Image (cartoon, rainbow, N blue to C red; front, side, top):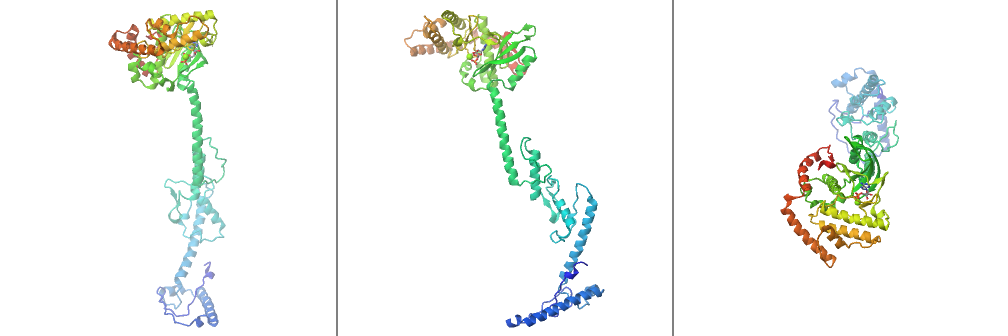
Length: 532
Ligand code: ADP
Ligand code: MG
């Protein structure tokens, strides 16, 4: 048997019992220090040991009955180191067994990419195994650490058995798993370098910091995307609006949607070319007033609609998106009223959710200038002023409306005619703040025309009295306002008492309200201008 030559069995000086299992220790004979240190004695011991080594080896070679003697106990061989001997023999046996196993393993796996390890059946610890067996070492490595950089994975979370168990926490396994996660699970745009064909291993620490970095990169990218999205919302052309516009073109109501005419705080006005609704032709040029779906600006305008009798009930019931639509609807109703009373203003072609399709005031895609930008001659200015006063009176007395945002910004000059626009905030005179709004309108109008060199412009209070046919007499602004407030209070009480006897408009508005509420919930809501 191999390795037998390395076995050194020491024969102690004392005679021991012949039993192979039970060796009783002999009492030590006390001796002096001088005796222990004696060189002569040491040399004698050495000689004795050498003799014993040779005699045992010879006996093993020659005496085939050695084992039977050993088992029966008939032999008077020294057995003090039998355990060690047995262990040595076992080790040799195990080594042979493992070599056979390796051969079998190789035969079994052949060139297969997926290699099955017989490692668990090995009995010799790899550290004890012959280090000069290179082949088996190579195989070990390929079994423990696959050549491909994919992570060792198992549903159980470990592979192997007993001492040779390799759990998912194994450093190399973890490293590979982390590396494959970076490739497979990180966002596609994440730059993780080229690890193709490499047995890349990432420690948990590196993996975690990569993950953190990827998350923050993702967030940053999301923020940029949000910003982009937000910027389109800023122009009220958010995806939903775009879809609505697309539908309008697709249904041939519009021929094309062109450039943006104006971007205001609450709306975006876009130029469009009209198509047709059923048999009716849509004007060749249209202005699409898109009410912004962001509520920020409209919140400050609550006061215009919250106390408006027509919208009071609905205001409390609707969600913010529907309130935006109400602004568009409110503008539609107000424009219709004005148009019916002969006031120059855009025609309402159609209302589609928060998009109001209006006739275009202007020509060849050039909108009519605002009064502020029109640079009128004095004679034109006089004409414009007279038209403006007349229109304000009509609006108040016939349309039962106060513009509430009237100024040179919301009056267009087209074909020697003043046109009132932007009436979504306009209210009825019964609105608790209507008269205050009217006074502000009068102040704006008076200021504009007088500052443009026009003579004989009515003072705001006089214009107010002319429009309302009231005769409020006050020495100063404060007193005028106090009287207005008192009047409003009185009107508001009257209004609650006579709510049932409202204008025909209110009656029809109420009547159609419920129908519209239902329509609002349906996705295909279309409210045309002649629906009221
Ligand atoms: P905002 O509430 O944003 O002030 P407006 O109704 O005043 O909305 O419209 C903004 C601008 O768009 C106007 O000043 C005007 O130049 C242009 N505009 C609005 N409606 C029309 C229209 N029907 N025809 C031509 N231009 C229009
Ligand atoms: Mg405006």
